[in-house]
Image 1 (cartoon, helix red, strand yellow):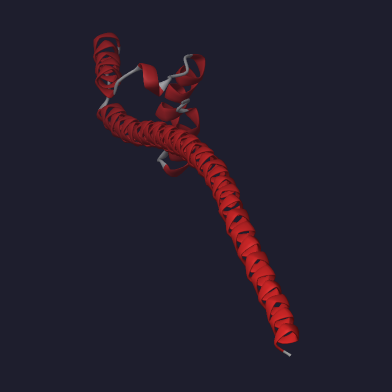
Image 2 (tube, helix red, strand yellow):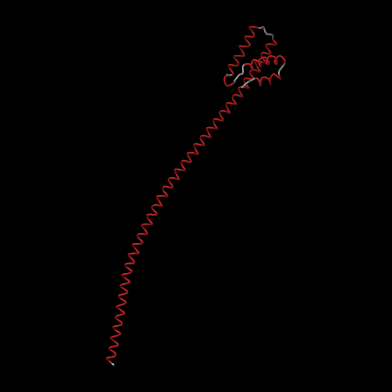
Length: 191
């Protein structure tokens, strides 16, 4: 993140000395953009301290310059804190996105697992259904065969019984006709 936009907002609110100092810092920052993810705040603080010490060694600073420098240092620290906050927010957003991606991935894997289990259950059910259907077909064929044998057996028995009843009825009928003929002959002879 480039800090120039933040500093320029702070410059608008400061005193003339602060504005001048911060403007010079802003120019330096425009020449070398600071990317927050690559530099930690301890390194930024150390760089600021070294800059103040170099100035003290080269130029004697007045009390106003020192106050302006202190204010600039305070503003720089505020900027660093603000930049740190923004970096933390970006990091949190990245972590939230990664967490959401992991949750989505876990949900997708869970759905696929459930689908696979459902498919396996459907296959097992289809196999069981086919087995039961084959058993029912075999039972039906067996039942039809037994029924046919019973029909044939009963028809043989019924035919035998019908033939027996028919022969018995014919014998009875012939016996009655014989008896009637004998009575007729016996009645003619007796008369």
